[in-house]
Length: 204
Image (cartoon, rainbow, N blue to C red; front, top):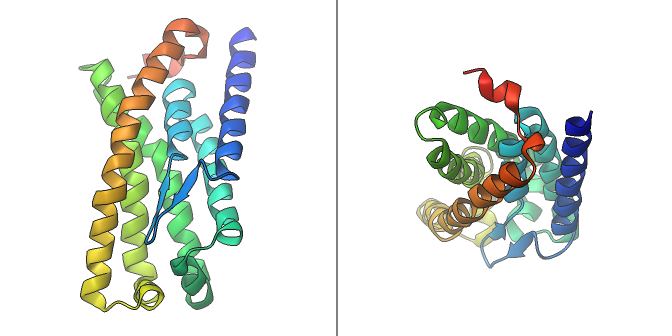
């Protein structure tokens, strides 16, 4: 019972942080052609500490705040994409967020037997990269015309913009996740062992 209570409390803390980040400039930092976000960090940490189901719940909070940003601080792409292909653009926001805990969980489980600590680092980086590259690939597939119209670019320029965002946003975000998430997870597992997932970890 204590383990369940502590897990629920920790989940609530992470959700509270995400809502705080999501509805303030801390979580989404606008740039001229993209947005840097740290919203994936609580999702990654929650997945590694509490498991896949809790991670999926946190990803739903990420999705909620992403959609809220469309109305609170819309960028050029979202304004055009929502008028031309709203369903496609919503999918660009939803699918990559849902894949963060899946990719994080799968990577950690695949590596924990051979390199448990290394698995935490790789899982954290992969979770962040899946979010960024998943979003960019879906933008390319579903709302590429809107991207060109939003920034007055031809196809070559729009492709260059996508790759530029991948390098200037995706890689720094992955590095931040790589630095922050594993150490937070290791500290939590050491200080509050009952937060860990013993049954899930034993099933390899």
